[in-house]
Image 1 (cartoon, one colour):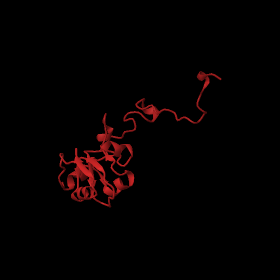
Image 2 (cartoon, rainbow, N blue to C red):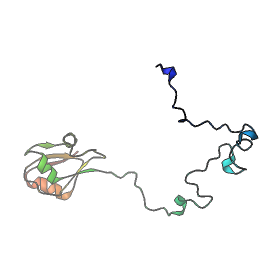
Image 3 (tube, one colour):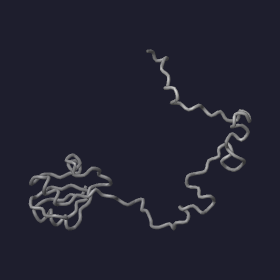
Image 4 (tube, rainbow, N blue to C red):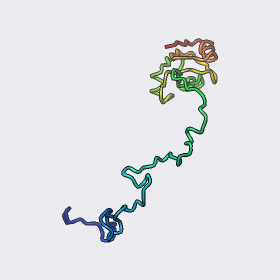
Amino acid sequence: MRLEDLRPTPGSMKKRKRVGRGPGSGHGKTSGRGHKGQKARGTGKVHPWFEGGQTPLQRRLPKRGFKNINKKVYAVVNVKVLEEKFEANEEVTPEKLLERKIVKDMKDGIKILGDGELTKPLIVKAHAFSKSALEKIESVGGKAEVI
């Protein structure tokens, strides 16, 4: 068997519809498109969101809210996670947090939050700290440095 000998199984393929080839074909004159109207024209396409002239949904619904384009979105890490994943006097940096898969994406920076307890001193370098996290880090003799 050679490549040029390959043929589809008989009956598996539909015959191509040849439109606009005279009245005897059954698909002549209007070529199965009916008479006039948008869908009978050359590029007769109706957008999926077109609602027949009715005011579209996106225009009927009221505008709400405000999107601040300058907002900073931080990847957050709680103090209890630092307690579990780091040894005493170890330096905690955004690179180490990514490396140990504590955060997946740094976004606009790392923010340390104060949920949980901290018992060992750590040197934490991050882009932002909550007040409670700062207090907990410094109360056990650690350092919090804003990058």
